Length: 261
Image (tube, rainbow, N blue to C red; front, side):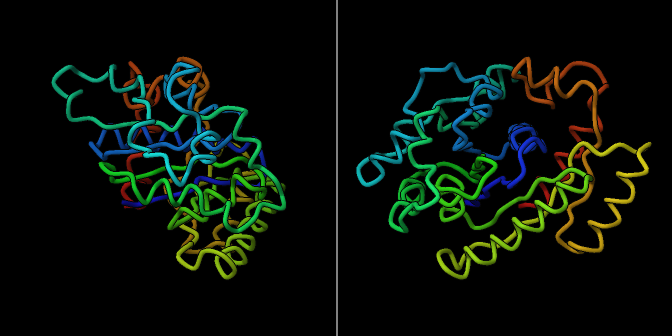
């Protein structure tokens, strides 16, 4: 089972969008997937068509990590119901629902034993090929809990000055965290989101990223798509969206998921 934290120390770069795009690709490819929503805003939970108030939310599960069986508390994503009937029985896309209650763990001084709580839960879970952890855009307790449970961190960045600087900080933070708490943790790669082909600034920043991150920069770059916000607002998987407007975007997520396997 592969466990990946999707992270950025700069908010607003589309971290949750990338999580949902990868979840859509996984559902499309038949990869049995669990999404753990550690962000107190719970946007992944909403975007994956999970009704608020269903399931046991992440904060409660972290509190009960020594006793809880995660298999009993996950919720099926509503995306599964959008598949053709003959494919639904074999499809697996589940969610550990997020809520503001998990913010109780988002302390900068979190103890090492508390960092291991999600790892304890995931060590006992079965039936998944891939776990995607949607982390908050900070280096406080919840992100550290996600990283301590993961084998890799997938970084999300935009081709802008502040995002490039934030990604640099995050990569340094991963190395320090790995050395001190999680020797298994590596940087899985950098996904560039919301790139515009007609932007000179974006072209310059992409070249800068190629120089800085080299083999860690994942391709293809995710181009800005005017329909992406509408798809997320409808809580819909990009691979099931009708029409051809997002076909290239869906293919890009397929390629990224294949590289992460």
